[in-house]
Image 1 (tube, rainbow, N blue to C red):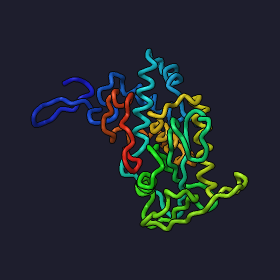
Image 2: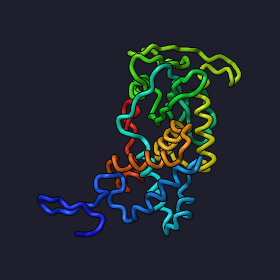
Image 3: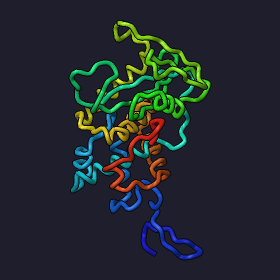
Image 4: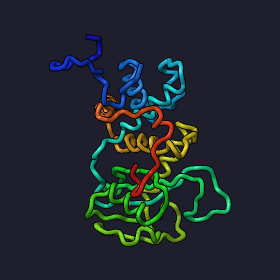
Length: 264
């Protein structure tokens, strides 16, 4: 029997230990993958593909890029708990400035739906997801997927949030107030941190079609920001990586479009 293979005691078929995981079909050793996981989780602000290529001595930028995007997919656990209690919900945009457009109008920018859980005066857990538009069906779908029914959902006065069923909807109209007095202070703080991270660690070089992978990483980091042990973050990522289904490179390059409800 070849090394790093499981052997079926009944049919004697050999299968790789990484089969059925995010690491399937990789020609890199598990040691390299573990080093990549450590680099990704031990750095406070993460690492770029160029940085990972340099640290691991990889011969190809494409290999480093694919490793990071596969690991980012594993940073969101399937069936994770939804937010609860009081949750602020709003939208953000990512992309180049578009002249002549005001308010919520956007043509080429990516739209990000953001939900932030209250934790007293502090920020609790977050959920972020790109969405195709700002219709009522899409925004209500995002809330349903992200927030536990019966929770209090606080939004601004945008009309697409009207008619929200299954939640206590607290709708507050934003007037001309200083940023620190915004009706959704927690969600705006998270949006600011997200954009600073994208512009810092990744130099703003994040395309709309791959933005969800970066949102996964930001969510993973933010929701574990109080963890005192980098080792626990490494363990959690490794644990989730072996529970994720394989993602072929073709799907990384051209991810599936966002469907109704903001869910892929």
